[in-house]
Image (cartoon, rainbow, N blue to C red; front, side):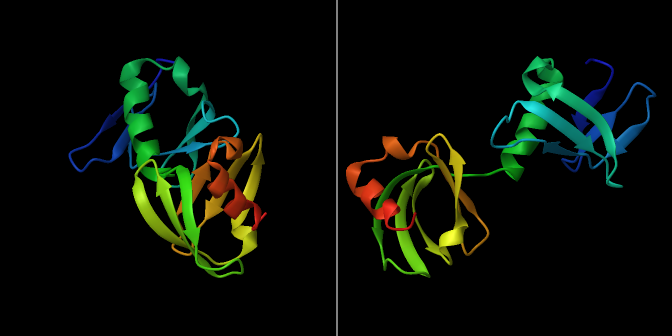
Length: 154
């Protein structure tokens, strides 16, 4: 996997340099399965929209290649995790939810019950009216009050 280099330019953009030595500025990492298998299957997409490299397993890369990719993914895939649902404004939609996340307390507006997606194994992904996604990693791990509120929408 060391047949390429990944660095940042002076403007903070990712630069991919392949075995041919040609640098490609503005590379975007895209996970094939961001929720089900985040470590498996990652594509480096060039500014023209074409794939420059396929990485079967991100964790298999050396630190020098992996670190800039992970930093870019962290910015692109910002998904706070809900740790508690304090209250909901109404049990119909749209409704305002007051929640605690791993990033602090916030309030979000749920436009439709379809904004809650089941991912399996008790995991949920909740899309908000502002385009932000919030995750619930394990529904069973939520406190009783949170589960009771959530179940009214499922």
